[in-house]
Every structure is written in C-alpha cells, then in structure tokens.
Image (cartoon, rainbow, N blue to C red):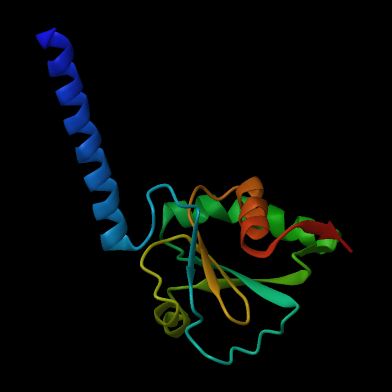
Length: 152
C-alpha cells in the first residue's frame, strides 16, 4: 500500500512541477509553450495596409544558414500565390523580403531578434509565425491568422 501512495505522491509532485514550469514560461514570454502564432500590435499606427490586405514579411540575413534554408520554401510559396490568386479570410496577401543586414530600420521597428523570422501585418495586428518554414506551414499560418483560404 505504501508503494502505491509513494507513486501517487511522486506523480503529484511531477505534475505540480510541470504546471509551474509551463506557467513560468508563459509569464516570462507571454506565449504558451508550443505556440505557432504570436499576436501583437503594429509598430506604426497607420501603416498604410488596407482592410482587405495583409503583408507577409520574411526577415533574413545573408550569413545565416537557416535563412538560406528558408529561402526555397518561401520562394515556392510566393510563386504558388503569383500563379494562382489566393485570399485568406478575404484578404489579399502581399509578400515582402527584408534583408536585415541592409534594412536595419525595419528590422528594429519589428523587433527582430533571430533569423529567419516571418511576420504577417494587417491593419490592426502583427502575427509572428513559430515553427519550421515550409510551404505547408506558411499556408497554415495564414489560415490561422486570417481565415479560410480561397482562390480568386
């Protein structure tokens, strides 16, 4: 009987430690562990983005191997959208590539701390993608941030 109660005590302590760790992570980062989508307000109040559009930005550097690896899926996804017109949640997506080595102003404005970074800006929100850059993860990111995908 004491073995069972010992196991239950250890399991309870382990569960408590995991819960405290997850809550601590959230308090420090303001995101839940495993989040694929971070939401913030735009850095500029009037960014010039219309209600029916969104700007998908790829922040990269020339020296970062992960940025180089992300270039192929980014280019492929961009090409798919060039050939077939898609909207997400009724918004047309415009693509922008920002070389953080040469555009330090925009990099600082969007508070980019690592590379590659993918952000999506609408009139009133900025979404940051978390996870591996693939054509499918880009599509899921846009659907989660903006809404259903439709061809025009």
